[in-house]
Image (tube, rainbow, N blue to C red; front, side, top):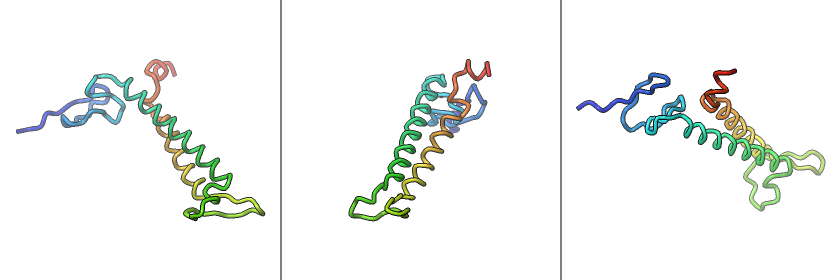
Length: 114
């Protein structure tokens, strides 16, 4: 028996029945992209805020005040910087920016006008 195949009306890709969301952002279950777009925007914003928090925490010494040393530190005079948290924060921040920069996270009206 052949599996039931879904087709995305936006990009035309074919998917098995179990897939609920197309990579282009179209919701194959409910038939719209607005719900997926909102989820992606929230996820992107959370990543950006988390990345900024980690970078700031790393600049202020991070986990240097904990009894366990799990990260990479370096000192400038008496100032201690946690490079591990800064790197992790930068990666998470970049990921959040990439999520928000995807074309399907924009509204259709803005995309057509611009």
